[in-house]
Image (cartoon, rainbow, N blue to C red; front, side, top):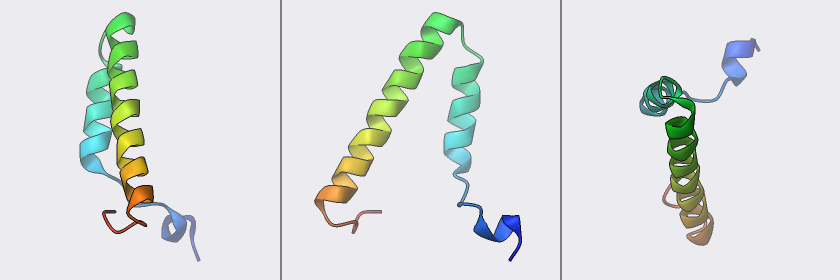
Length: 55
């Protein structure tokens, strides 16, 4: 098995969003990363709550 076989699936939309956030000034970047963190946490909590069916 190669390293690529073990790599997680890449979410291109997330990578694009991260790149856009990273281009912002530092203060805006902090707010945007916090928003993204909150969104991802909510998605994970929702997945946990329904036993993983919404993933």
